[in-house]
Length: 266
Image 1: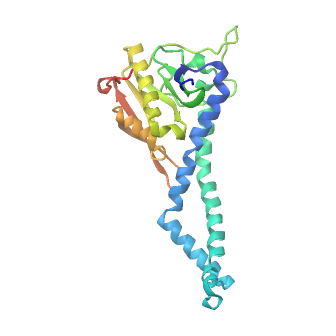
Image 2: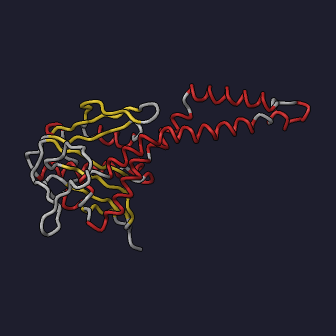
Image 3: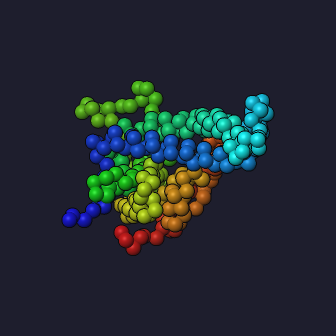
């Protein structure tokens, strides 16, 4: 029997569809967490009970002991009906911010020609982690001169040379940015996100001594990423734009070269 093999490899041009799908999935995944947090919000629960009670009163569905045990279950249809309405409303309210952010990220220039963009600096890289041939996760670290830019592509802004290649300046920025970081949920318990992050940081800091630090965005809705960043010494640098109906916190964390400790596994 062949033992399953884990493999870390650089992204290829043929991976573009897989990468775009994974990025879209990663950016929309927090909606489920945001929805669950709203479901258990005391104000939402109170409103649900209140409206359900109004519905029960209107339909005369209060418990009736004359019908035995089933008579006490008569309010359940009202509770269920109102809860379904609340679930749809909460998802709709949360979805707008996440969809806008996902669309913005998918329009950034690093996803036009992924291998070319992430070869602009020796410290840059976009890696895919596979286990037994299956996609497990990915991480993209941008140390190019545009590492701190969050601009998206505007129509007609892409310039190409005579060979049809996108024109991009080369070099290494003092501060790199982790643009994409995702691990499939089934593999998070095994700490695959730690392996991805260690690999990217080791590559970045050893490839070019000009690099002084690495930035990453962390969110309270993506706990596994925040935990991985803090394990490796990332510290909150500044607060970022809040997201979702309840304006969940996001922050930009920084790991300076002096605080980085190479992993013994690398």
